[in-house]
Length: 492
Image (tube, rainbow, N blue to C red; front, side, top):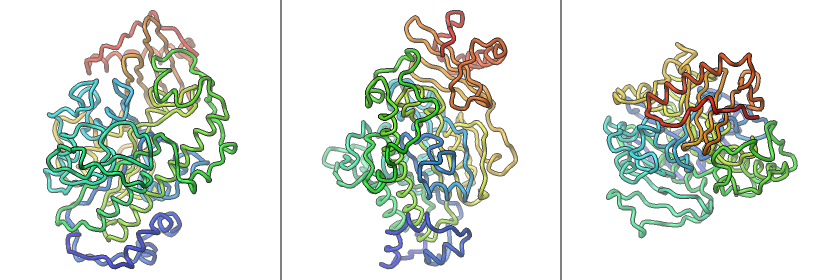
């Protein structure tokens, strides 16, 4: 920390029980936290707030108890939401290839749509002309530090961060207990001899590494600590204590469960979809959801431990905490298992913010993108944003000045799916070879997207409005997805 405060062994023992402390403390206010954590006194704080950004992998928007799921146990994220603001309608924009995490993370880091965030829509390289969030904060006086999953190119990693540890570069996670991670390499090479195998569960690895940073940081600059988990992404193999929380036969099957998708959406047989047999069965989907919930609860506990360490460091009151994810996931909804689709379960993500300037106990249903975070964090930090962002600051929502943010959000998946929605209606257009399908959902009356009303005469005006909006968006971004409406047919 800035004043050189050192931690005693007693302080460090408090870190070990961090998650239990953060989940169990029911009292609010700094006095209750002080009784439990006894944070060391700090002589002075940096003028600008620190930023702690936590990112889940495949974490669906409502797979948090406080945000709508009564089964999953997430006491730490619940408390984070209660102490700040939860945005319930945050979206990603999808992308042009199956590894959706690549473009969505690029957008999150650049505050730009996927059309501008990447240098090539089929590659993982963040466009060199885009200024990343870490790069911008670094230029304006922040010490930037990366922990965990990056999944974009190494050049953008190293221009974003001055340091880091336990960096999972890219690729599919094959074993949550034996990740291949790197020490931070200032040269940007990340040679094979910098790889190590911590042999601990991935969430524990990344939480421990983030806690080490919070314990050891002595810089005078405010910090930006970016910590990205590889969970609850598959392999969904939670530690036993979390798996035991969710007996599969007790897990409800989602209302929009289907044994198969009603038509070819262009991506029915891909790695993520083939992790469970076709056709889907309720019993198999219960197993998948139970394992997923176990992974979510493990992430929740890791986050609790990190937040307890932040409290013990004495920096909590001057730190903006953000939790979000790259995208969601289906897990049996609509007959799908993965995230290569544009239903809400896959394009909506959690977004929770807490910190100085953010009132506790707030919730916003405004339509927005997760990558609207970039200018928001700049505003909260008191620094100017880059001029060429597509993102829009959430500060008016945080201050209660506005209740709406975007009139529409759009998303895409490869060359086969496009989506546009407003605060009630949602349109998805499909083009798979010569086949065209259209889905229109009235989300106010059908939040599980079960009843396609594209052919209903009473919905014709809404369908036409959304199609005009989608076509205008495509023109603006240079998207060539075919919109042959005359050939489209309503599909169940």
